[in-house]
Picture 1 (cartoon, rainbow, N blue to C red):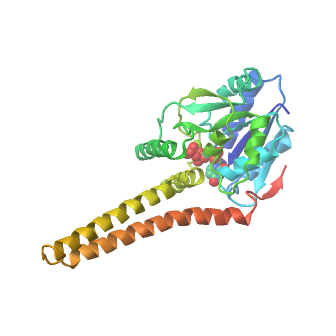
Picture 2: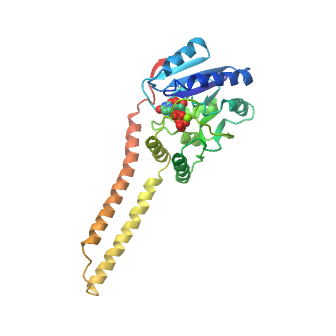
Picture 3: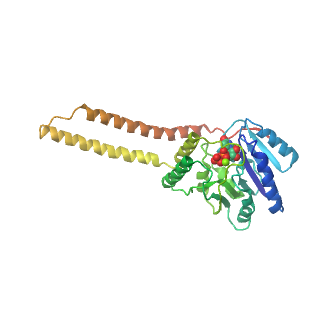
Length: 308
Ligand code: UDP
Ligand code: MG
């Protein structure tokens, strides 16, 4: 196989037929000389997605599918796809046509002829996306770039074609808490960026809710940065010196000048403040410890129920 098109699908019965027809058409028109396979990963869909995939693969020998035993999440579905793909090049695409298939030929050229190991689509704008979500995403990318010292650009998504050696390096990252954007930049290699216009999904609904995105953002930060722990250390040190200063000042005030110590309000405020800070930082530590706990169990990242 020259190229494997990997498509994670979660309840995509409406978008899948459109996607399949469109990508087939582009491949037949512009990449007909190479051997291409589709690898759809059904991420525990509860609608007719799996039925559709079975129908595709019954008709088309270049069309394969994996069906996971439950919804493992997009990151796990992409990993499963990369793991089972046999192509010399692999491309990850969303099933909703938000990743324009017309870019596939130039991506293939970049990876096979221009010497890049990766060619990634880059979303040049955020039209069609809610205002709150855009603002939060932008803020998140600013924070994570600072915290992780890794090049995770706003707009750089999972739409990318990769050479076999890059795919193998990604597969070598065995962590259970997978944050693909971080893993892409962790493995390195030369990447060519192709801008594309953001479009609304072809059909169906987005699988993300604001809460899920928030968790995803925290996952990104905790998986690729230990800055929150450093922050806790800095805040702890600062508070220690503040408390020391306050204590000395109170002692001098009372002993030397005979002023009575201020009432209990100050004390209550300080106790609340310090306890709050302590709990916050304990919870940050807890995030790392619990991630470590999940990693140490060494559970599989995905489980295949059916394959075809
Ligand atoms: N997806 C998945 N598992 C999930 C959630 C999403 O495989 O748990 C797939 C989904 O079917 C789609 C892609 O990931 O092909 C992107 O999802 P979506 O379009 O909902 O995300 P958005 O484009 O809004 O970020
Ligand atoms: Mg989408």
